Length: 135
Image (cartoon, rainbow, N blue to C red; front, top):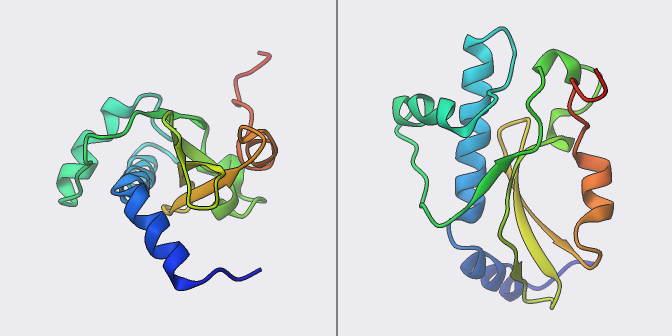
């Protein structure tokens, strides 16, 4: 069901720089992977040089964590826009009354997600298990 423009304006005001930060991180992940045999970085510290190189910055108001640190090659059969690589640990209340969180996707996009189940359903579809899990 489409929402009125006012809803999106309020959502983006509440989200502040969160989606932009998620996008910038996701883009830095892609640049890092390009230089490291398609491998995403194992820590957030490793993307700092890529952010600076592209004149991208983070607002400093978010606490991001890596949720996928595998290889781009492992995503070849999956639409990259459907795989989250980072997420903000912090959530907030969206205008809809649902809890919202921002994610950075493997295609370099930032995405605001609303949930009424603590993000379990969305994350089950968009966060892949670590490729080293179970090894």
